[in-house]
Image (cartoon, rainbow, N blue to C red; front, side, top):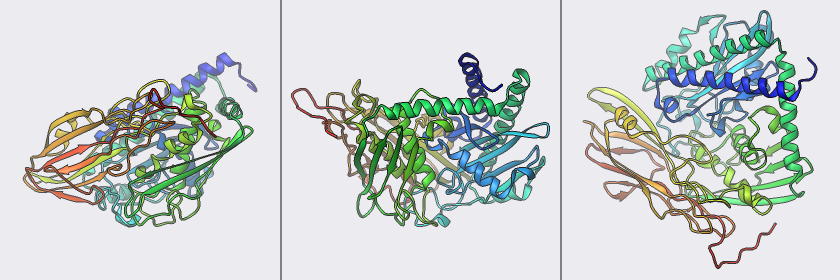
Length: 521
């Protein structure tokens, strides 16, 4: 086959996506941790033999866009194609080779059809624990943040690397959850590989031909969408609390014909804190924002992103020098989509949203209760920014799509009782369309020993800005027994204490009735 008619292509393309989603369902069903099972912090991908992305699971979070293809290319530098065998499984969690921080474990497997390497299956999942200090913005360098797994073979020609498994088990707080999720990833990889082989056998198709057509059409769709924008330079900046000074992301978008370049010169320098963002994560959220605005309906594949270039100065917070601390990189990386949307608001006002009520909030609780160790991670969301069509939704994650962790899961994993969970009415910014409200989450510590707690929580001082005349959202608060605490530091909370989390509201969109706001480039 040298060309595929549109109907056949759509059937085959949809089938590839369904294969990946079936493998993702396997990962979720067989996982041990609530981070994968409840919060959907994972991705499953199918790559061709040249490590080009063909299909990505529908529930994948944006920070994993285009990361696994790059990770597999890094694997091949250590394990060349000709050395790979059926049954091999490769692994790493190196932030600069993977998704930007140590908790995300990347697993990839070559797919052979007889003796021919036809592609790769890949998974990434956020581990329940990775050792080191608890994930916190307060760490100063990567060596504090946990176990860093070099590019290795977890399984070689069908034989498990038991030494590596033991190293992982011995360096994490909840080894059964971490190793259980790891084997769930392997199961998902294997299922995807087998389902692909079944499909190729049934249809007689050449995966490279299908992939080339998918990528070419996706690239064309993205380039046509970019070309519809007026050529020009579009700029914006957005800030959050930071530490001594606010952290600022400054973006400059250069639209020229059918390509776009995003540059982050002028953003804050890297910090001796864990909110630095490695380049692959910077690219992922830049590409995600542009795709949301320009071509949201095309399934993710390499073709969608060939027209996009992203750069950030070395030594900046979006391109730090090793060994920068990066574990809380979402506290900075989640600013990228609202920065880009704010820059493009003057030319695409109907396709952008105001700033969300947070970089995603996250809480980690660790300790022992009744002599048994526990480590629990759960997520909370601020409001979603208002748009030209509607108010922002309350307590909904953006730009990530991680789920709020159910109360029953929180109470099962840690010795706590959730005494209140409610929306923070009126915390979204005003405007033609209001920003979404944040939420209140209050819990009582029930254990027999102090609990170590760390947080990813921002916008306690710097509110989420509105867009095109919309008002700013309300700031958030973290309280212990009613008193504000600094969530950027790891805390020890005594039994009987009450922890209250109040997430921020989002920015509103457009001027309220009676205001006169003019769009400007």
